[in-house]
Length: 89
Length: 386
Figure (cartoon, rainbow over the protein chains, first blue to last red):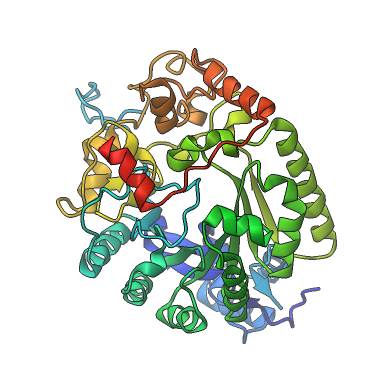
């Protein structure tokens, strides 16, 4: 169960990168690609196996000052990402 | 679907809209130590001029990346035959591709698996012919293939790659689908492609020997579904991908997601194709030695030929499904009806649909096995001497 203290890492079965041609972040896997929407990409860009969910939220709030109180959304997205196996804890 | 023009009047030759070549398949060579009788390479592969050089391939990769390509497949033949594979992998990685090595595993060893990883290879797909050593080796035309494949699949996982195992299924191995799946679970595959033969090239020549019956197919699909449920309940993340042959459909497949929409294949001699079978069509296709990929993808006659819907005849032209299936596969239409603008005969609306139902019937009634035609240089020369 993911909490604000959890420290997520990208699943090494996926590669995460900025894709100019799609104008978005993507997750690449064998013979496939998941195009991420803006918020999803910004969150995963901060997943590095060192930051906690809480630290990711704070980093986002300082990068996007208008996005206050997004902790719940970040947690919800990462729980979903864990279920999709994009990240591990 | 035609392009708009600024004054609102229709242009004379609208270029149908098309996407980016997200998938670049590099068929590095037609050389292969195996002889699978369902190989996707052209029948006359032995009659081909020189292979692209390292520098020529790297140029293709660079031009492809600029067009938006992100997935790069190293295929063949057997791509391991190319001595410059590490260099090509490195080039692909520097350009930002996700690179896939599609191999039989024959010619692979621990050192190469490691060197490829260091060069930046993302994924290795190992193909098997069967889950049973003797059937595998009979189909591959090699006595040592199976053992080598097992060893290499284990090595690929040990070195941390995502692994896809590919089993081409047909009437000789589809009844062992449970053993195939068990083997894939044991080898810790991440994805398993249980893909029935696509009946082009060598597989078309051997269709009678390969096409399963409907009962065989339904049983295999049911067992696959049972395994999916069982493995998911155990928390096993393995993904089983089951591909049925279009011969048992009533509507054709949306082949390649549409002509020249997503895929770009480059053959060993530099011919650029919208799919790896298209070389059989009586259409002139451009070569990367003569044209930049941008021109090839956006402007060439070959790539624009079946884009849009203008080329269609009935029953496709007025069909509600045309935007979903694009009239099916152009190669299948050409191969079976002699006219690439016809509806794919898989479609029950096609006047040629009996060609498909006849093949189903033949699969049902087949008793004696005829000789398989193996994919090798000697047999290939027969086709171009023709």
